[in-house]
Amino acid sequence: MVNYKLIRSNRKTLGLEITEDLSVLVRSPLKLPVDKIDEFVSNHSNWIEKHLALAKNRNDGEMRRKLSLDQQNLLIQQALRVIPAKVKYYSEIMGVAPTAVKITSAKKRFGSCSGKNSLCFSFRVMLYPEAAIEYVVVHELAHIKEKNHGKNFYAVVRTVLPDYKEREKMFRG
Image (tube, rainbow, N blue to C red; front, side):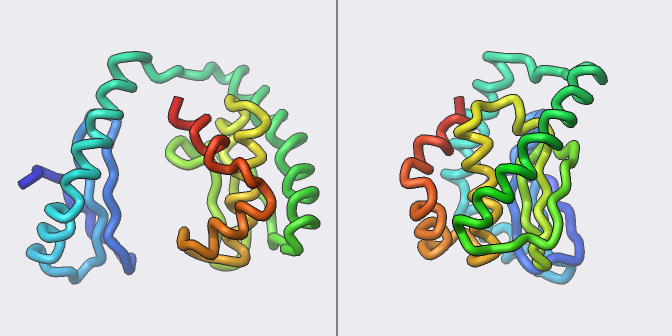
């Protein structure tokens, strides 16, 4: 059995995360029994092993780049110029309308779509090529139509970006 740290909160689903210090973090609903959590971890042992190895290689191969305040401010300004324009362009193509577009300093995700269709994008996505930025924008806009990552979701993404799988790979480099 994999050792893990458990964080219970007012959520509906279980979540797994490999932290920067290579520990396994499980996020769980408040009242879910421990045996169900253990079963979830056991069922995801292959995923955990794979992602621990990837995280270890990433930590060995490159120190996480720390951005100076000036660099962060420059990226924020770029994001404020680039991302809303891309959201406008792709939302017209996709026939969707986000309720808001915000730029954040999130470190663990490049984008998110709330249940009320408000989109958030981390300024850190600006460190990637334009094709990758476009993928994140289309990915989040697709959540306005499909709230999960099922077949229908990826069908929506594929209609706009047929090469989305190649674009996804840009984040794994």
